[in-house]
Image (cartoon, rainbow, N blue to C red; front, side, top):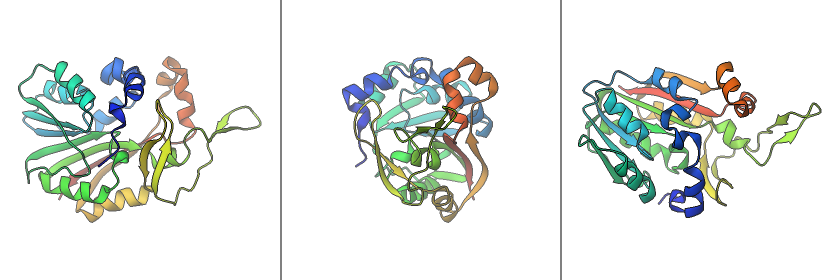
Length: 243
């Protein structure tokens, strides 16, 4: 079973105050870049893996998706998503992505935002998603960039000009990584970029586009704290489809 850190009271309290949770998709700097990767949604059946508070699930319906089925391991997340959603075409379920099994050819789009790096057996998950998609169906997901995970806090140092630098630590050593973020010992699973993409290719996905998100100058002007994200890629964004 995956670590259910989101039901830790301290973690959930801190996480709930992030701009992307207070302001929804408008508080996520990468949202416009994600939209560019998504297919047309009219009439589509969507699975949202790691749906959190349901922001994306509700947006998919606003774009005329036929139905959305959201999954999250956290009871806190699912309760909040249900409380904020008044749409019978959206359903939320508690589920562990390590063991989740979706019906075959039941979805036209599987979407996930910043969740798959919590999953240990990424290969199993991707093969299951492939089966759950209709032929030609889309998979769009974001994860912490592998370089970001291997160069995360608290390992940054200051260079001679006083700028933060992030030495990459053991990038080629895949496996568990723990960090202190709102709570101690948050567990993530580090995989190289090659491992991530080869898992998709091995499951017979075709890659549409790969993006390494960085904030725009306008975003940095509005939120100066984003400037440090120019120093190393923060997020990997992938669009693929079932052959």
